[in-house]
Image 1 (cartoon, protein in one colour):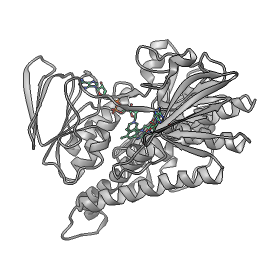
Image 2 (cartoon, protein in one colour):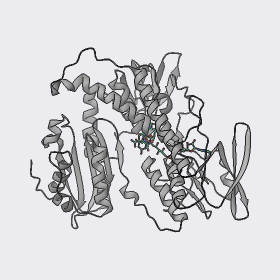
Image 3 (cartoon, helix red, strand yellow):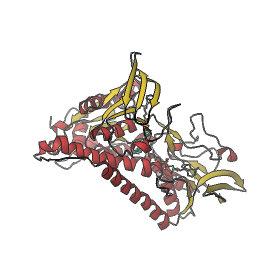
Image 4 (cartoon, protein in one colour):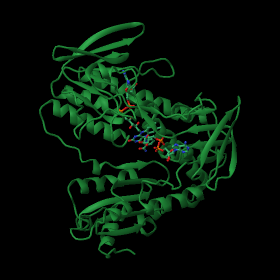
Length: 469
Ligand code: FAD
Ligand code: NAI
């Protein structure tokens, strides 16, 4: 029994079915049109819809500001928000329908409703499924909890998804706000802030931490801050939010700036993107002797096993990055463990991508973290500016930086800010999974002209022998 059908749960269900298990998956998601849906946060209100709106807004901005450089002039350029949001909805409909198809293909039973553990029946676990005024009880030999996460809200600031929105509302604005405030300069704040800025909103982001993108390599932080400022995204760091007042058509945020001075930000809309909390409410964990930790996560070991044999937990509801591909990999992992196999995930090789423009992507450790560990390292960096393909497509912002062990040359971290960084990072992930040295990438033939040549040049730069600079 899999509880939750986000990228963790639905992938676990498919892999377990491929391995010959009889699989059911409980899912309670009801979309804004009142229809039950599979796919979880990622497919319904996360990765997929946000990337659809990012693509529309990015193309608009390119047409507006950059097509001229390519020798293309356009008149009467306009934004049709209804159409953009409609396209996003159509993609969500198609991809969530795709999961339904995969469930049918793999003979996975979708139990529609809320799943709750209800103790044991002999060696099996009991799961109650309630929805539509009905409740039924099921049993399973193995349970995979994949209940995901929900947006964290500010205390005393109700989210109505009209004036004050979390990710759900921010993906469904029906018009471009004139002034948009965002609380939290994390991944959602930057991605959705970028969407609405590109479409014409004046966007101000308020961030509590004194550093911008604090967990990324300092070189990325610096470059990203410079580029986002140039694009017109205003980011105030080190703020303390004092209060949020709303009317039917506006919002006023009072805060202290980094110097402790009282400030007020007036806007038409506010997005609250201050992190996410795991979904463990009303899950009946105690009925089988489990409990969430103080932050709401289900404690698991390195192989996603809870302390109760045959019960696993994966994805956003457990430790580690809240990323769809991490959830998917854990889904495959536990299905294979249940099958008696011995799979493994190297959490150091899970890539991150922020889909701003340029994109930001990294895998492994930052230079600052490695230095703090006292590790002897060497680093190479190569700018997109010196790459022929980047010039041709008009994408010369950013760079790739590779960090390697000073003695063994093993790649320890790769940090990219550039167009298509989400695709470029995959080469670095493969290299790190295979414990490659920077010399390996430097010696491998890369297609010309392509942005991937920057990866090779950055690898050569580790040994101070980049060719095209
Ligand atoms: P979820 O996708 O949250 O799915 C959990 C499912 O369980 C839900 O459908 C829920 O209804 C169901 N459920 C919960 N409790 C019960 C219950 N008791 N009974 C029945 N069903 C239940 N990650 C990336 O890697 N790349 C991105 O580009 C990206 N973009 C994002 C953009 C936004 C705006 C947001 C909000 C998130 C984004 N993420 C992205 C994060 C990604 O969506 C999550 O990491 C991922 O969805 C986690 O998968 P999951 O399977 O653990 O949980
Ligand atoms: P986040 O953790 O990325 O960022 C939250 C930010 O809000 C942090 O910088 C934090 O310091 C700040 N913050 C917290 N409380 C605050 C307060 N009271 N006032 C001001 N600032 C405050 O969380 P976010 O953006 O909500 O996204 C949630 C998660 O969803 C991400 O961590 C990521 O795991 C996932 N996600 C992944 C994406 C991707 O992979 N491209 C895209 C979007 C989301």
